[in-house]
Image (cartoon, rainbow, N blue to C red; front, side, top):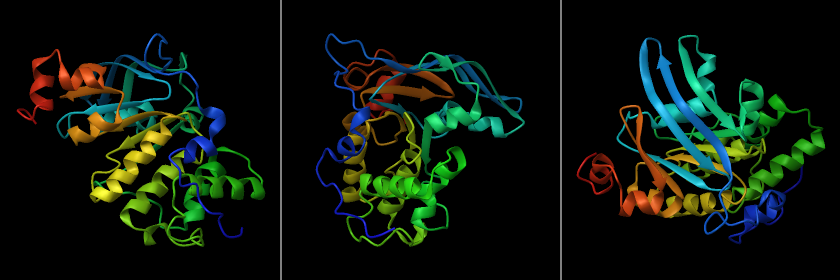
Length: 282
């Protein structure tokens, strides 16, 4: 595989790369948003302990849904339930319904191919200690049968799409761990979108980054929502207000309030949600 071409630098970079997936319909006004994910009466158990209780949530297609709340309130647990990672552990189970495109997602392999997850363990990006190319190609090799040329094309397109090649062009065979913190986060997001999923789950995607890198991630998320439905765990209230369309406030494993972001931050109905977004509780 040769050098990467000059990357897309406009605000429409991902729209250009994945334009066939962009919906021309706006999410606001008279057009009713399409429901991408519907969670109904979901309870999650880790051994005998119930970690999530009575979760009801709707995520619209081509938009950003933020999960906010205090640490250990269940936000990251809910992300892991949404892509059914818990099924890998014998002592974890879930009851209720998880619908994607109105279909109950019972096939774990199918679900993982449809839902990409870029999460941060211990508040840091977590690429594999292998090359950027192998990190990006890993999901495609696991879930698809791609020719070497098709895999090369997928990796190159993905790396350009998340702007990893802005600083240097010959980076694909460098270790993922050699990148800066912001670039490692780009790589983690790239690994998720390389599978060409329909949904992205991001856990604290900018929590340890400097302000310039945080702004870059926010711009990337703004582009990603033209192509994907995103569910994002966010601690920064100002960031949640800037980048999300809908917001859920969680507390002790429950969703206390869910609404359009402007409603949650300007006119929350529940006293607990109001106390949290105004900084009096948290």
